[in-house]
Length: 200
Ligand code: GRF
Image 1 (cartoon, protein in one colour):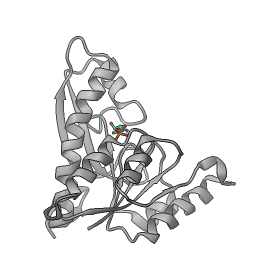
Image 2 (tube, rainbow, N blue to C red; image 1 turned 30 degrees about the vertical axis):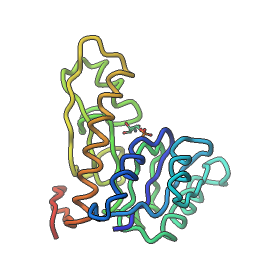
Image 3 (tube, rainbow, N blue to C red; image 1 turned 180 degrees about the vertical axis):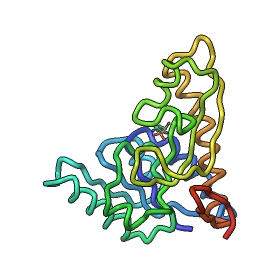
Image 4 (cartoon, protein in one colour; image 1 turned 45 degrees about the vertical axis):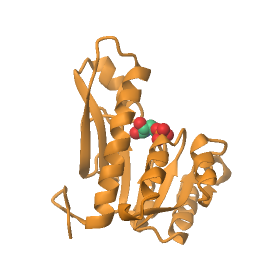
């Protein structure tokens, strides 16, 4: 399967995918990496791996819709089977979802439907939950509302701050992402009644 991965930051989830795809038995290859900003480690990781990159900044486009169309066109030019948002901090628009809906995945640092939005780790800590984790889901038109592919659980420790908690989440998140994307690629999947099942 061909993967396009979208990033906005450190790209450790991207790196985990790049490492996994080095094994042909994994069943998927990262064919391009896209971003909404320059100068991030995520893009550098792609360049070091010899993978083509594209960047579209919202502020370089007259409207959000034009930015969305540019992202869609660049992604589509690599003919992905799956698009993976891995720490990509922008919401896809209607054009993007029309092109990639049902095969656009996002990873979120909380156990959805708890703590959606930009601050999943901080909001869980603030709430005082004793476990949290990460969720891989199929993006729909809402914010972190799509059908769930996989979840991984981590404990919240008494002395956690946002950074220590998010780091623990990210360790579990990377493993979950690599395991699940590999299975989606190798086995296929169906979505019925919001339930994602592996196999075709
Ligand atoms: C991940 O925890 C992701 O879920 C969140 O931001 C983090 C990105 O990490 N939205 P990285 O860029 O993959 O290292």
